[in-house]
Image (cartoon, rainbow, N blue to C red; front, side):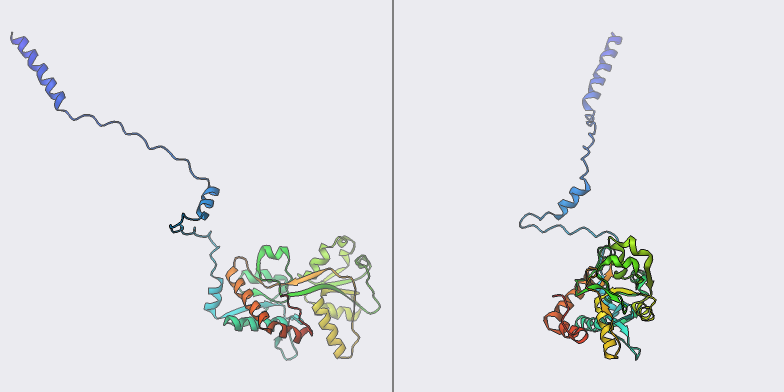
Length: 310
């Protein structure tokens, strides 16, 4: 009897314990893993307009190095350092008194006046102009620089502001009626110039490439044209026009200019790649000078006509 009573008491205690125990917590379920939004879609979503009545999400931070404080940099310095080849008349050159003058010089001064900063003109090695620019030794390249696709890739280019052409200036007794004749002529041009690029880009380049001599500047080309070391000089029409004007004023024989040339050559100002704010500021200032007639006034003073692109 005691044994049975003992068994019954143990069973009762076990039931009571089970009834009082807290129920076990259900097993935790892992949160589902959501697929990542592809970067292209994420970028597109960031540009979508916000629903009406809601503020748009702030734009994503630009990539490193893309932040443009180019105008703030110039404004804080209070000056714009212009890199130029100080031998390239009539765009920018050193006159007999040692002063740097020229069409681009006067235009840059007028632009800086609109912008409220001081222009500083820094002569550079034209063949190393991009290194000078990217090394921040200058703020822009402004000296009859041709706007080319290659330069548009490596710089921020301004609007085209002047129309030019690449001409062939001939020595006395030399007549060029066809580019093919260059294979039999001694050709001079400036190193790093668009004149050289135009020669190299022509389909007949291989026929005359060994006849080309590169010079530090166009003035040296003309000196060798004078001495007969060159038959022709390939260069900017504005330079050729200026040189002939100077020779005529001095009573010297002017150089013949071929009726054939290497095509149009549009001038632009080169800024560091990504300096869009500064580029736009200068573009706006040039537009102001076009509208108020100052740009035409400067062009007429140097060329006798208005060559500024509207």
